[in-house]
Length: 301
Ligand code: PAF
Image (cartoon, rainbow, N blue to C red; front, top):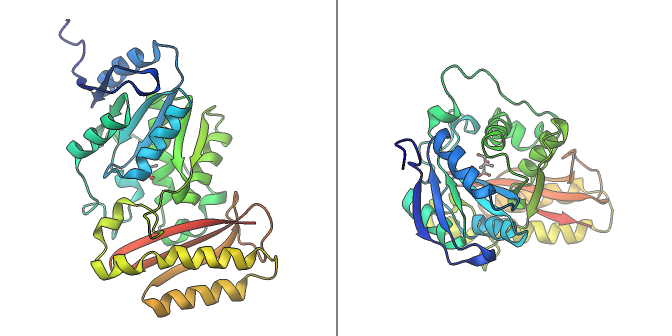
């Protein structure tokens, strides 16, 4: 094998799901990625990207399963993206467990794990970012200034590196999903964005890598965010004015011990506030429990 041929690690063979019986390649440099990608697409299957920040859970694995149902070769990225964290946010504390993540990806039938370094993603001379307005302006965009610039920029870079035909995103981050859709549309990227339903714990809490930082009492309280949203969504389906009822839901969450940032009825695509429910509508919420900020959303109508 020539010296440069492939430092990309060939991990243990997968179990042949979806007609694939090879090994998962692990790439850490652009050179390794180029070679691993070429091997993957040589079979003629579409290439799917599952972008992640690691600390993988069943929600991430459902994204991989969605890609495999489309008979795609699956590449997953793991990169804790500093650009989407504010200065006072939890970048340093964000959970990281590379060995467990690689084992989980392998077990799920992922064929390429892309683990770029910070300097690969943001070399010193880099001078370009992606700024999305529209669906990025309110809610998370207001609460976390610069967050969606960071998300859109890293996702655009990952798209350029992996060049997938499709990419899977969880509905848990509803606003992020709409921001990515908007970017792909506006920039004619030609990538199909597959939305995958939120995976919940048995008690209704949306799975999130940050849940592991919840104190036990907060973990017990956390599912109330979802039950409040589900009850509110059912009540708003009558199409009557929403404001009083969303405010009452936020007040009830505060009474229960949350520190709500917002509970809002919005247009599901533009994220603009709606005075009353009409399709396509979405109820979105963000609330703190201790040091953990939870977000969740449900369909209305
Ligand atoms: O949803 C996430 O985990 C991240 O925002 C993403 C899409 C991987 C970009 O860093």
